[in-house]
Image (cartoon, rainbow, N blue to C red; front, side):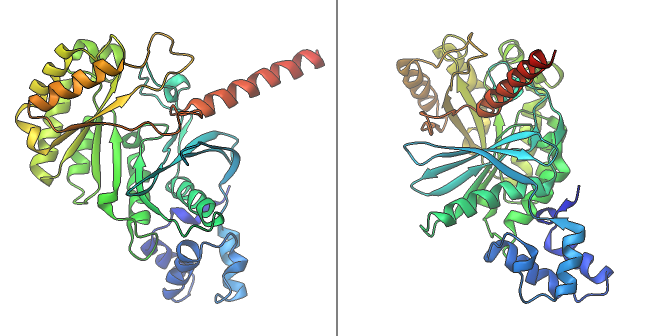
Length: 363
């Protein structure tokens, strides 16, 4: 399979051209066509010589993703199910807010973290996505908005889709450099957030990158016993090590960090857990924000239910009284397959059932 041209930074594309005896400015021309004019084929790049376009076609592709299905919510949320060149499926979500349009991207096919409440972890990781496959998710969403003729642009990115971004670190960083470049999509670093379940080594690495991209840590529990029950990664990388890495990140960057906390009815949503969480954050509270997330139920995880509204309000109020900045995430796309990985899981189940039916017919 050919490489995705969307995986090339401007600098790496300049090198590609010069190594083949072409002027480096060709790279900027190509980037203009990709990210400003947003063409679909190399033949549309009319100010580039035909022989150069042929070289590009021989080396690269612009279509590593195919839209398998798209769901549109009443609130304007769009959920895309993409099929990759190798047949695998991934999801991408467009969410619309007052402050702009945010896209949640996927970084892996499946996930090995195995959080017990998550649809993404129902199927283990098949492979990492290339940086180009991640960038192309943004491009598909932007082109879908272009078709609506609303002059709307992707203004924010959250790397919170299927997979653990820090488990695909090099491709993640290449993706961030492409979408952040002011000569391309020019999405501001402070409008981009990367979420991790807590891969400690990579939190240190990310702190040393010297970039303005936001970091969110999926915490979901205030102590090791409960967090290990919910998130198996905590067994290998317990809260103490995770919070040491957070301390390093805060000291190195002086940037606010977000703690993601999914509220599960009767599991982690009590006032006792709220007080314990406030104590855990402790002296980090000036640079910390807790994002309280109502749980999107998943058919396969019947043990978990969405926290009651009164419990959510009590949890929120308890944190606020302890001086912890927090908020409750507004639900998006509640009338479609909103949970991360849910649409993909359902489609794969359909395909497995269809395959069994064909095998039974041919037997």
